[in-house]
Length: 114
Image 1 (cartoon, rainbow, N blue to C red):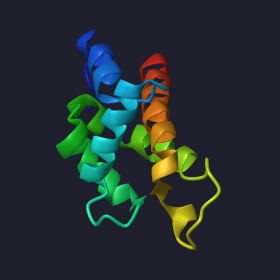
Image 2 (cartoon, helix red, strand yellow):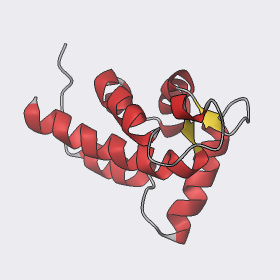
Image 3 (cartoon, rainbow, N blue to C red):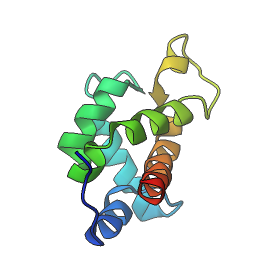
């Protein structure tokens, strides 16, 4: 089933995906990160992201587009050289801003090519 698009999604994406380099967005990212990194190990798995999209970020339309989430996760997890032996399979805190930016960008692609 194809998702229905409306103009409110763009305002929600701007509000709930704080990837800008401002102090307000940085603080919002820190709060989101703490809520999404459930076990507090400094790494976010795809499963944690999936749960975080539903419970923390709360954009239902974006949550339903799994290919967007998977591609954003895979693009972000290789953005910063990992300090952990497991880091290459997860998004680390330093990559979280990229993840949010890619979620927005890939969702725009999804809508454009749908």
